[in-house]
Length: 290
Image (cartoon, rainbow, N blue to C red; front, side, top):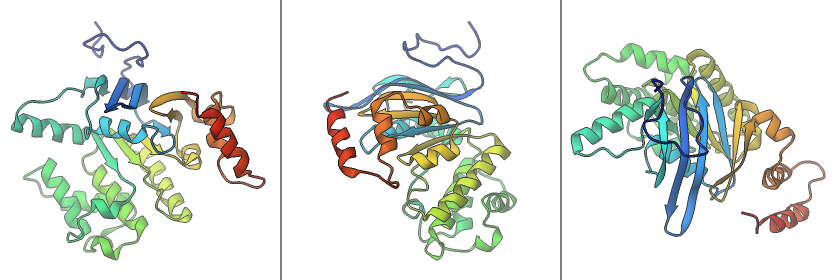
């Protein structure tokens, strides 16, 4: 059996377990009562790659992200990071904490509103030191803090600032620096630029592109914004009602979508000659399709 082969039989639609894949998701299912939030979802993220998961609210994309990062457990399916399954529950308080920390060093997440994830009482330097001390206790983290601030374009001038003194873009840079502190293999960006002005969005996306080129980190973008997906991802997964309706190379899917729902998402983007009534009619016609 190859070194990275799955220990159990993989779901029928599972991606091949390839050593170059930093993340592999196979046959994920998650139900909340009678609602199937995620239904048989499989994809792979190569090392240094960028994959976009797109869809409207309720499509299941954020549930997928929460399963990958470990905030939710799948009812079925497997999540493998660098070939190692991370789907099982760990028994015991001590072992559970160790497993959670190990997973956090592999996968980090940046949320839409960084202000809600930053303690308003703690300075930027304190935020980074707190994360570094949790994962790497007993070390002097001064040098690493400076490196992280420089990496996200803030510099040491921002080290003493509290979150309320920073702009939205600066706070998101702090959130990115905190995620990068543990040098994860995968960074999940859940609508990470949706709350920012367009010009600031461009700055953050350029920053993320530079970081990916420098570090080889893999990105999983969770977004409804096809413009963001077009700019920063190599591959795309289109979700609807918890089901993957289309996936492939980003430029190919967006240039010639095969599924009616993907076409609807593209046609829903406002532009000259955009007809909201026609979009609404197309949506009603599509609704019975599952």
